[in-house]
Image 1 (cartoon, helix red, strand yellow):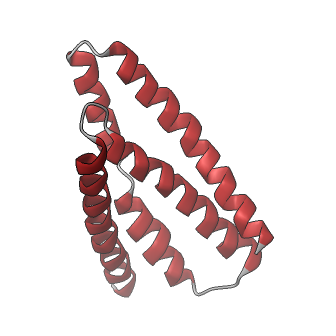
Image 2 (cartoon, one colour; image 1 turned 135 degrees about the vertical axis):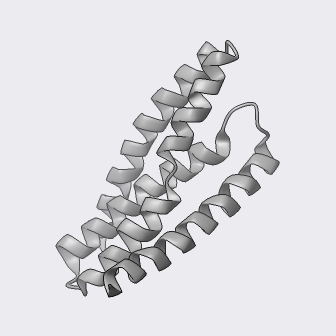
Image 3 (cartoon, one colour; image 1 turned 90 degrees about the vertical axis):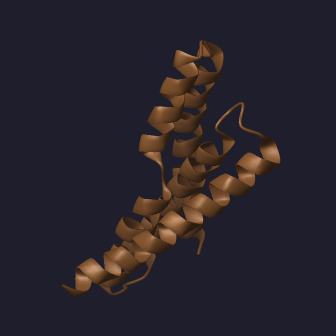
Amino acid sequence: MLNYLIIGAGGFLGAVTRYLVATWIGQKWGRIFPFGTFAVNISGSFLIGLIMSLFVGKFMVNPQWRLFLVIGFVGSYTTFSTFEYETGGLLQDGEFLLATMNIFLSVFLGFVGLKIGEMIARAI
């Protein structure tokens, strides 16, 4: 039961953080392109690369930290389903170039974020 509470606490914080980050970026950069979701997906990819590399390769930590940070926080913070929905909306609006950019850049830069997180973790 404790593990569920740990995941739930991380998930609550991740969801709130996602909302704050995506809203702030959307207000700052506009909503023509889903910049908020894009930024959350890239930074979430970075975070999971960093955290998992640190936990697996560098530090022996209580497994409950992985539940809290990776499954709870990052799992709730990243927004793949929202990414899919917004990309579908771009396609429905006839914005094929923006939809293609969103797909390509999110996947490519998400992977780059993951690898940068892993490299930083190795350097620590």
